Image (cartoon, rainbow, N blue to C red; front, side, top):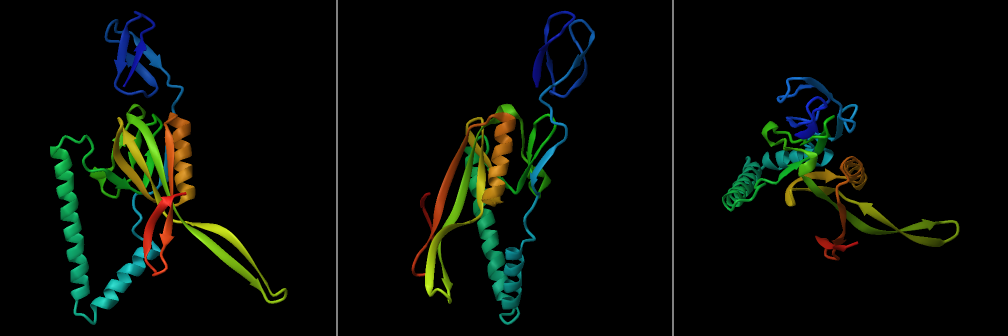
Length: 232
Protein backbone atom coordinates (compact mmCIF):
# COMPACT_ATOMS: atom_id res chain seq x y z
CA UNK A 1 0.00 0.00 0.00
CA UNK A 2 1.22 3.51 -0.83
CA UNK A 3 -0.07 7.05 -0.16
CA UNK A 4 0.16 9.72 -2.89
CA UNK A 5 -1.21 13.22 -3.50
CA UNK A 6 -3.74 13.68 -6.28
CA UNK A 7 -2.44 16.40 -8.69
CA UNK A 8 -6.01 17.54 -9.39
CA UNK A 9 -7.46 18.03 -5.90
CA UNK A 10 -4.30 17.84 -3.73
CA UNK A 11 -5.95 15.22 -1.52
CA UNK A 12 -3.99 12.24 -0.20
CA UNK A 13 -5.22 8.88 -1.49
CA UNK A 14 -4.20 5.32 -0.75
CA UNK A 15 -3.38 2.77 -3.44
CA UNK A 16 -3.90 -0.91 -2.71
CA UNK A 17 -0.48 -1.68 -4.17
CA UNK A 18 2.54 0.21 -5.44
CA UNK A 19 2.43 -0.95 -9.05
CA UNK A 20 2.72 1.63 -11.81
CA UNK A 21 -0.51 2.36 -13.70
CA UNK A 22 -3.67 4.45 -13.92
CA UNK A 23 -5.77 5.04 -10.80
CA UNK A 24 -9.07 6.80 -10.14
CA UNK A 25 -9.11 9.46 -7.40
CA UNK A 26 -12.06 8.83 -5.07
CA UNK A 27 -12.19 12.50 -4.15
CA UNK A 28 -12.48 14.16 -7.56
CA UNK A 29 -13.07 11.17 -9.89
CA UNK A 30 -10.07 12.15 -12.01
CA UNK A 31 -7.76 9.54 -13.50
CA UNK A 32 -4.15 9.92 -12.46
CA UNK A 33 -0.98 8.12 -13.51
CA UNK A 34 1.26 6.69 -10.83
CA UNK A 35 4.81 5.60 -11.70
CA UNK A 36 6.90 3.74 -9.18
CA UNK A 37 10.55 4.41 -9.96
CA UNK A 38 11.67 1.64 -7.60
CA UNK A 39 10.08 -1.22 -9.56
CA UNK A 40 12.28 -4.00 -10.84
CA UNK A 41 12.30 -4.75 -14.55
CA UNK A 42 11.63 -8.43 -13.89
CA UNK A 43 11.31 -10.76 -10.88
CA UNK A 44 14.45 -12.06 -9.19
CA UNK A 45 14.56 -15.74 -8.19
CA UNK A 46 17.33 -16.91 -5.86
CA UNK A 47 17.43 -20.59 -4.94
CA UNK A 48 14.58 -23.01 -5.65
CA UNK A 49 11.36 -24.48 -4.25
CA UNK A 50 12.87 -27.71 -2.94
CA UNK A 51 16.20 -29.38 -2.41
CA UNK A 52 15.16 -33.02 -2.14
CA UNK A 53 16.94 -34.55 -5.13
CA UNK A 54 20.47 -34.06 -3.86
CA UNK A 55 23.25 -36.65 -3.94
CA UNK A 56 23.21 -36.86 -0.14
CA UNK A 57 19.44 -37.43 0.08
CA UNK A 58 19.42 -40.00 -2.72
CA UNK A 59 22.31 -41.87 -1.07
CA UNK A 60 20.45 -41.85 2.26
CA UNK A 61 17.30 -43.25 0.65
CA UNK A 62 19.30 -46.00 -1.07
CA UNK A 63 20.97 -46.96 2.22
CA UNK A 64 17.58 -47.20 3.96
CA UNK A 65 16.17 -49.32 1.11
CA UNK A 66 19.18 -51.66 1.07
CA UNK A 67 19.12 -52.10 4.84
CA UNK A 68 15.35 -52.70 4.80
CA UNK A 69 15.59 -55.69 2.47
CA UNK A 70 17.49 -58.06 4.84
CA UNK A 71 15.64 -56.71 7.90
CA UNK A 72 12.20 -57.26 6.33
CA UNK A 73 11.38 -53.54 6.36
CA UNK A 74 12.22 -52.94 10.01
CA UNK A 75 14.75 -50.20 9.20
CA UNK A 76 12.24 -48.41 6.94
CA UNK A 77 9.63 -48.67 9.71
CA UNK A 78 12.03 -47.17 12.27
CA UNK A 79 12.88 -44.29 9.91
CA UNK A 80 9.20 -43.62 9.20
CA UNK A 81 8.38 -43.74 12.91
CA UNK A 82 11.15 -41.27 13.68
CA UNK A 83 9.82 -38.92 11.01
CA UNK A 84 6.29 -39.10 12.43
CA UNK A 85 7.51 -38.42 15.98
CA UNK A 86 9.54 -35.41 14.81
CA UNK A 87 6.58 -34.08 12.80
CA UNK A 88 4.19 -34.40 15.76
CA UNK A 89 6.66 -32.66 18.08
CA UNK A 90 7.11 -29.85 15.54
CA UNK A 91 3.35 -29.33 15.20
CA UNK A 92 2.92 -29.24 18.96
CA UNK A 93 5.62 -26.58 19.22
CA UNK A 94 3.92 -24.53 16.47
CA UNK A 95 0.60 -24.82 18.30
CA UNK A 96 2.23 -23.76 21.58
CA UNK A 97 3.71 -20.65 19.95
CA UNK A 98 0.38 -19.82 18.27
CA UNK A 99 -1.48 -20.07 21.59
CA UNK A 100 1.11 -17.81 23.24
CA UNK A 101 0.40 -15.16 20.58
CA UNK A 102 3.59 -15.46 18.52
CA UNK A 103 3.05 -13.56 15.23
CA UNK A 104 4.98 -16.17 13.20
CA UNK A 105 4.49 -19.47 15.05
CA UNK A 106 5.51 -21.78 12.19
CA UNK A 107 8.87 -20.21 11.28
CA UNK A 108 8.83 -21.30 7.63
CA UNK A 109 12.02 -22.90 6.25
CA UNK A 110 12.44 -22.66 2.47
CA UNK A 111 15.18 -23.23 -0.09
CA UNK A 112 14.90 -19.96 -2.00
CA UNK A 113 13.25 -16.57 -2.40
CA UNK A 114 11.43 -14.75 -5.20
CA UNK A 115 11.41 -10.94 -5.38
CA UNK A 116 8.61 -9.54 -7.55
CA UNK A 117 8.71 -6.31 -9.55
CA UNK A 118 6.95 -4.44 -6.73
CA UNK A 119 9.64 -5.77 -4.36
CA UNK A 120 7.22 -8.11 -2.62
CA UNK A 121 9.05 -11.22 -1.43
CA UNK A 122 7.93 -14.85 -1.40
CA UNK A 123 9.81 -17.72 0.20
CA UNK A 124 9.98 -20.68 -2.19
CA UNK A 125 8.63 -23.62 -0.20
CA UNK A 126 7.61 -26.86 -1.90
CA UNK A 127 4.16 -26.61 -0.32
CA UNK A 128 2.04 -23.82 -1.78
CA UNK A 129 0.46 -22.78 1.52
CA UNK A 130 3.88 -22.35 3.10
CA UNK A 131 5.20 -19.90 0.50
CA UNK A 132 5.34 -17.02 2.97
CA UNK A 133 4.86 -13.59 1.36
CA UNK A 134 5.91 -10.28 2.85
CA UNK A 135 6.50 -6.68 1.81
CA UNK A 136 9.58 -4.45 2.21
CA UNK A 137 8.05 -2.48 5.08
CA UNK A 138 7.74 -5.73 7.08
CA UNK A 139 11.38 -6.73 6.67
CA UNK A 140 13.43 -5.43 9.58
CA UNK A 141 16.70 -7.43 9.44
CA UNK A 142 18.43 -10.55 8.11
CA UNK A 143 21.09 -12.74 9.70
CA UNK A 144 23.46 -14.86 7.61
CA UNK A 145 24.54 -17.97 9.53
CA UNK A 146 27.69 -19.44 8.00
CA UNK A 147 29.23 -22.79 8.96
CA UNK A 148 32.66 -24.10 8.00
CA UNK A 149 35.31 -26.66 8.86
CA UNK A 150 38.70 -25.26 9.78
CA UNK A 151 40.97 -27.34 7.55
CA UNK A 152 44.73 -27.83 7.56
CA UNK A 153 46.27 -29.78 4.73
CA UNK A 154 49.78 -30.94 3.91
CA UNK A 155 51.22 -31.17 0.44
CA UNK A 156 54.09 -33.63 0.01
CA UNK A 157 56.52 -33.78 -2.86
CA UNK A 158 58.72 -36.79 -3.47
CA UNK A 159 61.34 -34.70 -5.24
CA UNK A 160 62.23 -32.15 -2.57
CA UNK A 161 61.31 -34.43 0.35
CA UNK A 162 59.62 -31.52 2.02
CA UNK A 163 56.07 -30.78 3.11
CA UNK A 164 54.20 -27.51 2.89
CA UNK A 165 51.44 -26.93 5.38
CA UNK A 166 48.69 -24.47 4.58
CA UNK A 167 45.26 -23.69 6.00
CA UNK A 168 42.06 -23.65 4.02
CA UNK A 169 38.54 -23.48 5.43
CA UNK A 170 36.02 -25.92 3.99
CA UNK A 171 32.64 -24.24 3.77
CA UNK A 172 29.52 -26.09 4.93
CA UNK A 173 25.83 -25.34 4.35
CA UNK A 174 24.33 -22.41 6.26
CA UNK A 175 21.13 -20.36 6.33
CA UNK A 176 19.63 -16.88 6.35
CA UNK A 177 17.25 -15.92 9.16
CA UNK A 178 14.57 -13.40 8.22
CA UNK A 179 13.09 -11.03 10.81
CA UNK A 180 9.71 -9.47 10.07
CA UNK A 181 8.50 -6.59 12.24
CA UNK A 182 11.38 -7.31 14.61
CA UNK A 183 10.48 -11.00 15.09
CA UNK A 184 12.22 -14.09 13.71
CA UNK A 185 9.74 -15.39 11.12
CA UNK A 186 11.46 -17.64 8.55
CA UNK A 187 14.70 -19.04 7.16
CA UNK A 188 16.27 -19.78 3.81
CA UNK A 189 18.20 -22.98 4.50
CA UNK A 190 20.75 -25.31 2.92
CA UNK A 191 22.75 -22.44 1.43
CA UNK A 192 26.38 -22.49 0.43
CA UNK A 193 28.31 -19.53 1.82
CA UNK A 194 28.60 -18.06 -1.67
CA UNK A 195 24.84 -18.31 -2.34
CA UNK A 196 24.03 -16.89 1.09
CA UNK A 197 26.30 -13.89 0.50
CA UNK A 198 24.64 -13.31 -2.88
CA UNK A 199 21.12 -13.34 -1.42
CA UNK A 200 22.13 -11.00 1.42
CA UNK A 201 23.78 -8.60 -1.05
CA UNK A 202 20.67 -8.48 -3.27
CA UNK A 203 18.36 -7.87 -0.30
CA UNK A 204 20.64 -5.19 1.10
CA UNK A 205 20.86 -3.38 -2.23
CA UNK A 206 17.09 -3.47 -2.74
CA UNK A 207 15.87 -2.74 0.78
CA UNK A 208 18.83 -1.41 2.76
CA UNK A 209 17.96 -3.99 5.40
CA UNK A 210 20.33 -4.38 8.40
CA UNK A 211 22.51 -7.44 7.86
CA UNK A 212 24.59 -9.43 10.33
CA UNK A 213 26.83 -12.49 9.95
CA UNK A 214 27.15 -15.36 12.43
CA UNK A 215 30.14 -17.40 11.27
CA UNK A 216 30.92 -20.50 13.32
CA UNK A 217 33.46 -23.25 12.93
CA UNK A 218 32.30 -26.88 13.01
CA UNK A 219 34.65 -28.69 15.40
CA UNK A 220 35.57 -32.27 14.57
CA UNK A 221 36.52 -34.05 17.79
CA UNK A 222 39.33 -36.57 17.94
CA UNK A 223 36.82 -39.36 18.63
CA UNK A 224 35.23 -38.75 15.23
CA UNK A 225 32.10 -36.91 16.40
CA UNK A 226 31.00 -33.48 15.20
CA UNK A 227 29.94 -30.57 17.30
CA UNK A 228 29.18 -26.88 16.99
CA UNK A 229 32.04 -24.54 17.59
CA UNK A 230 32.58 -20.94 18.53
CA UNK A 231 32.34 -17.95 16.25
CA UNK A 232 34.98 -17.57 13.63
